Image (tube, rainbow, N blue to C red):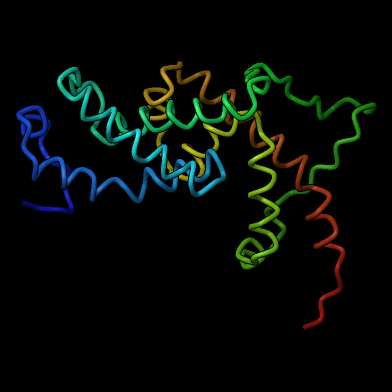
Length: 199
């Protein structure tokens, strides 16, 4: 059986153990990375991973193939991760954060244009840590969309299917997430841009 391609839904629904093993082996790394980015804790991420496949096994008969198998698994994993986040911080689940008014002179948002930074700047350990911290400070609703779209590279349609929201809602949340991250990181990047070139 080809381990590089997803098993057939028919085989999974027939209880084929090899198909189940193939699904777990193929998707575990992606699901774990998603969970870790969501809950920011390796042990919690392991729990999310296990719960995702347990729930997938239990629900496979109900899977109708309206989305891809990977999108369906992402949806289960995302729901499990959000459940873990709710237990940690039940008051953080507002999805209607206002978008900062960048034209309002009373709102002092210093938004640095990231395009001016050299590509290697984004590869430094320090910058990655700053970005990770800023992502974790997003609300769960915004963080989920940002992780799915910008880190796991799902399409807008796939993200909408995972979260069971409209594509318009995906775009709105992604805009809000990116603006929040720009605001959170602008001070850090401003300092980096001001540093003299020692080369």
